Length: 377
Image 1 (cartoon, rainbow, N blue to C red):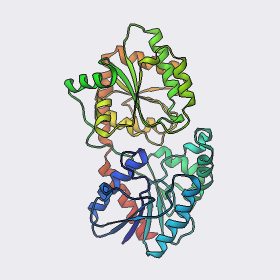
Image 2 (image 1 turned 135 degrees about the vertical axis):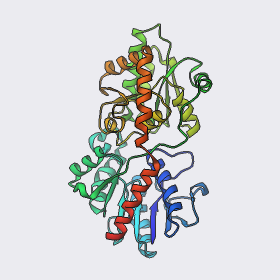
Image 3 (image 1 turned 60 degrees about the vertical axis):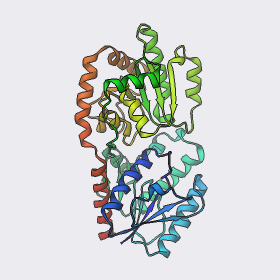
Image 4 (image 1 turned 180 degrees about the vertical axis):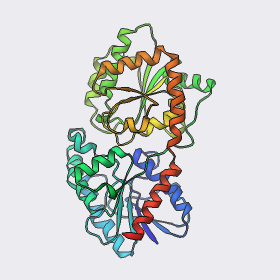
């Protein structure tokens, strides 16, 4: 069989949630199924580190697609033409974009519908494109993959899709994420917080990550507990919509104790998370939330928003907060910083919970779905 894959987001040093899903699943699937040929469709020159096995054929389809108009040209013209000219049996799209008028069966991964619920959180043209085309992508799909039951229900409700046409494949966690020893924890404190304890948030700096409220919660916590010396470290690439974040920092008394690390590699992220008192992941909208399971794998306590897919992922292994309440987050900071017993309990529960999430299992579910589409598409 000839399977074409949208690998547009396989970019060295710039993998985010969708990029890691793409990387981890394809790395396993292509190696495990040498009997099939996989065409990896890039929008620019590929990096050879993404050619995981000999049955991969990399192809560059212009134009470089980093703008809604170019997304449209790339997907609806370039990809469509390639699929039909090369007699491809199936098109797999981990970022959800699919050609709308092609006889080739298509399997998109629609991770979440944040752009439906919070349209103002995205740049105007990006949001308009998503809201116009993702309903069409969903209806054109032979089958749909998503990363949580929350997202599956949301897609079904918003787009009128039968749940039988949607399969859930949870994200996994890399084996690189593991607990730190005491010496490593001390080194992490020195590296990231000047030698003192710290809370951490990991994720791209986007409006839905709810970082202004997290900062105000930290300010409130430190104001009420000036005797507790603890920092807040934010790691992730700044993408867009950060004016409110900047304004908040300018108004904070304790802004000097907030550290920004930018995008980090996996080992540095492991050390950052593993050395923290707790991960604070308080997004008001997530389709999954990979940093939750990375923290659990590091045995780091998790504080999470009680919103969208996060309770589904964290189960009983998190201290939950109201993402729209600064006071709720500040209260969690107090509990985490003053109760070793709570930290130990959350660490233990997280270490057990994380066993549910494996990239091997994700890849197996994706492959079973691909086979189903190949048989019946």
